[in-house]
Every structure is written in structure tokens, then in C-alpha cells.
Image 1: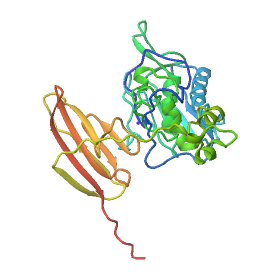
Image 2: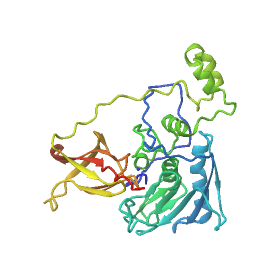
Image 3: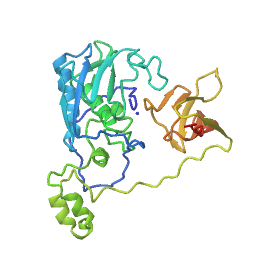
Length: 347
């Protein structure tokens, strides 16, 4: 979700801006990781430990810096690059080929798939890693198709900004205008939208240097003194106007649910459909009725018709796969994952 991967290249771009806080329909769609992982400090450091083959060092550093600035502009976070090779950093960034770091032996960390596949993925705090596929062609500028080279040239700023959101603790948003939408790279969305702002500020607080907006909001000024709040509180710290979570009806799982009792920490795998179908079906996965859109390295990995999870409190629930053919659901299976009670210690 990467905390997810982006599969296709966009052909559009936009300037970095924030959408209006007080206008239009407000639907809260951002998602914060349910485990609540975030950085415990606001002065975050990063280091680029491996540079791409297709972009020089200077432009790579510039692109990554611009991407971080998108988030520092709308939050109390600051980001500083560490260039000393011996120094540690909170977030490490690297451009890798197929087999990188621990992906070869870790069932919850997918390896890259080469040119024209997954662009990048990131890990939640405190692991703080962002991996880019070094098979891809990275540029400082708008994503576009090069007819001369016959490849997509990928906007590093856009992809990096999306992945940084994951490395800060954000999951994918359901707002199609959000930078954290799963199709943001697909559509070329480069802007920090209001939904992204709400998400990052829910994790780290708002950009309120005087630190007065939150107390005023709690005193009821949002309703009693609306004009005053709009004038004196930063638009990016929209505490009064963040919408309530929308109530959605989950997709019901099939009646036949197989229950699996699994020890904590064990990796569990599922396969949707038969082993060798005549033609690969379209498969969709759901957890507790909500569709799983992308992989989350370290937690959930989807590949073709397979799903793998690590058994923990967060991943307990009912997993459902649905097989689609010609737009119709032809079959479905469900598994209920429950943690096996731990044996009491003798001590």
C-alpha cells in the first residue's frame, strides 16, 4: 500500500498546491494504519543509500527533497537529508533491482518485477524504508511516454511523495483527488489534497504555530464563532470542518467460512480458485467486507490469486476472495483467521 505498489505510468501532472478547506463536499476518506504506527518525533531524517541508474545524483536529491516538502508544508514535520554514509537516518531510500534487502526470503516483502511493473513500495514507521524499482526510468519532471526510447519516463517527485506518505504512517485514501489514492500514480495526481492534509494532521497535529486552534475548537468556537475561526486558524489546520467518518455497508462474506486458528507471527497463505485454471480469472480480496486494494509489506501481500498475511491482532478477521468472469461473481471463498491462545508459561 509499497505500503502499496503503482503499476502503470501517468501522463498528467499538476503544480503542488492544497485544495480549499472550506469549500465543496467534505467526505473523509483518508486512512491511517490501524496499528497507529507513526514517528514519535517531528524532526525526521532521511538518507538516500542507493541512487538510480537513469537519473543523476543532483536531480535525484532535488526530486526527493521536493517530495518531502509537500508534506512538511502541511504538517509540523521537518525533513533533513543525511549525507554521511556512516550516520543513521529515520527513513532510508534506495533504488533496487529484482532481489533487494530481505524480499527474497521474506514472504511479506515482494521483490520487484522489472520494467513496466511495480514502481515502488514503502514500509510503515518505524522501519522507515522506501524502495524504488531501478529497472524503471526515473526523471525530474512530468511522467510521459518516450517514443524514442520506447519506455515510460516516471516522475520521481510524484511517486516519492506518495511513498513518503506511507512511510509516515498513511494508508491509501478513497478520495480520487488525494495524493494517497491508490491510483494517484496511475492518474498523475501530484497535488496534496485536503484529504491528505487531514490524514497527516490526524497523525502528527496541525500546522498551527500559535497552538491556539485546537483549544478554540474544543471550546466550541467552530459553531459559535465560525467567521473568527476561519479568519484566525490556518486553512491547513481545518479542525472544525473535518467530516465524520462515512458509514458504509460492508460486503457480506459467503456463508461457508473456514475457521483457522493460527499462532501469532505465523505467515498464512490463501489461494483463490483452482490451481491451474484454463484462463486466469479476475480476483478481488476483502477483509471483513472491505476490499483490499494493494499489498502492505510486512502485513499483507497479494500476488495474482494468492494472499499472504502475518497472524497478529491487526490481521485477525474474515478474508474473502471473489472470482469474477465477464463482470459476474462466479465463486467466493472465506477464511476466518483467529489467533491461537498462547500456552501459559511455567515461570
